[in-house]
Image (cartoon, rainbow, N blue to C red; front, side, top):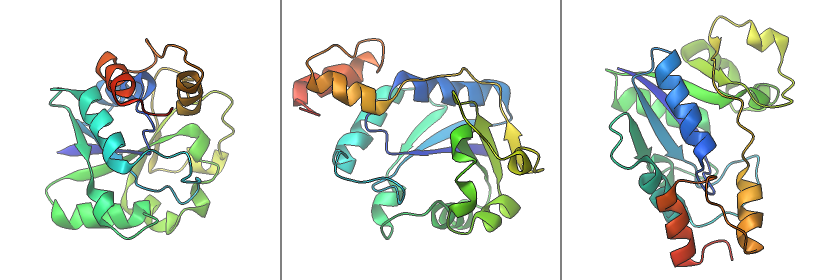
Length: 191
């Protein structure tokens, strides 16, 4: 099976993430999208990060019973900070029957060469790249045979904007799935 791996802090997961995941299913040979909740992104500060189990729970609420989507806590059990290449290696060894594709935003192509073992990732896996507003991507990477530009909605919803709105007492309806909004309000997250 072709599995798209969508890594992220999902702090919180929002409708943009779900739209991109669905576009991957609709516009590529990807048959399932696994949301890999990252406990700590090596390129991001962890100070504003909710506990990983809260973020995983929100992903589970967001994807509900969609059998094409799965939530994964795999990186919770790996050394930190977690590196994509280590997760890809682990998954390929554990599930040799699957072909894993890496889903990333076009804005990440610029920094991709700085990722741990970026050359190995490009050699062994395909990158499925969704468009991002104002992204300046590497032409060399865009033309790489293992990089596929995917037609997906240009989504500009930011988790930072959502967290700030919550802190300011504003509504996040229509930015996050309804069950996620209810969970955030009930648990008083991001306050």
